[in-house]
Image (tube, rainbow, N blue to C red; front, side, top):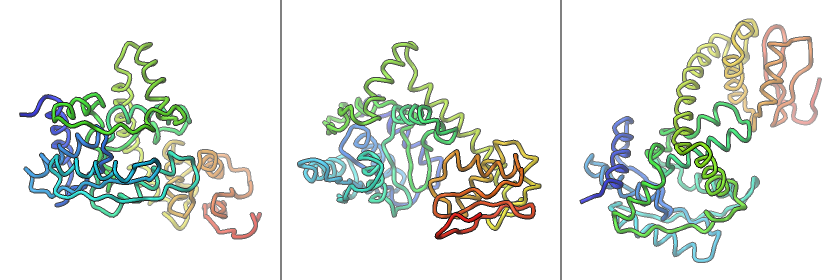
Length: 319
């Protein structure tokens, strides 16, 4: 018989799968930690009752001695917990942004290519994400945290505390692997987890992680409503080929900037910052005949004859 923690994880997976159109094969990312092992067991249990096949995907980052054995042990544990298949994918962790960002990019690249991949992010991970966004001033999209379903990624455990996944592993008689990187204070998330959140919980008398997760959910709902309105304005203003300033200038800033953001991303602008977005917005809201706005990728946003357009400037900035 399963205990209350195992039942809570299974219930979260059952509710998640009932809310989406789940494919025949459910993939689960497994690291060997408590969150992913609890998720793998719940996915196998619930998935098999629903007629799904379950595949465990283990990413070997190769960042420490013995990583191949750790990955193989994680795959074996997933099979023992009910997964139909388990495979290890080795990646090279390189690139800009520091080790955390490089590892994350490599991991998501290795996991891509499936209709649905379930990830073991918990309520505590969501709280950390919201705090990171708040500290960086990243705006409402970042504060809205991780989406439960952001195809192909699925996160059934965003309302489940980390303590519950640990308890589930204990009930299952499984000893999870403890990643030594999770104890290294040089990583921002580790300090948030071990220093900042415990301090906030103490000062505010508990419930901070759950409150941050609720805030993220509320902001996601607000953002989705604003995005729906912005989509209609985007179409009315002209779409990717260029935007009619007359349509935009009467809209509230929150909607107008969402339209501009969608347009700039669709036009090929990458690494779009808040400063870029506000500079382009000034071509609408504070038009004084100024020149264009230089954007990443040698692109420039200009206002011409009452319309906004993006042009390529491959060698020089242009006027």
